[in-house]
Length: 252
Image (tube, rainbow, N blue to C red; front, side):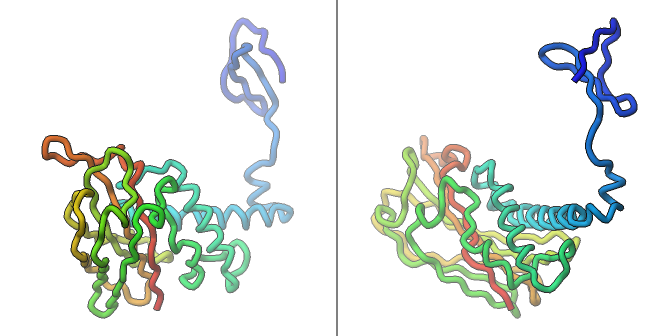
């Protein structure tokens, strides 16, 4: 590292020298590292190229899911969720035993690591709602239904402090990881229920999904909390306590 002592202080890059400012003054250093051209063509960097290709594939697949599930993800708050989802997607990619390294894909039969994925690690669904929904998928009709039995909020809902009401949220989407078309998620919500109610009748939520064909169908389910103030329900703490999870991935 060299100190700039010229009257004219430089910032930026000239040739293989980079000039920049730090807390201790203006510095200069020589650019080191491997050129992008060498990485792209040198046989010694074949593994690097393969890893870069698969990082790109995994990142694109994770982004596709985030965009598809956006209507429900927006109900939660977890800044580390994208990195957690990307990590799961890379596990799925590396499970591909068909394609060559660097060309591996997200195959439906390897999607297991995404089952029970929680979009809010601070509020996992299994620790927030103690009830198991039943899911029915009719691919021919393009319908997905979710039924949950009678609930007693005092026993079945672990509500955060300050919450007075809750709502059940449900969504389904058929995702094609090989297509450039963006998948859409069909969503449905229950009414809002007061946590103080002794018992809530069973609920059935249904959505229509277009042409699932042989694509994997993702089913998401969760719970959101609200606080009532002067008869108006306000979302509680920007979704920090809301739980949304992938509860089922249906394969042909």
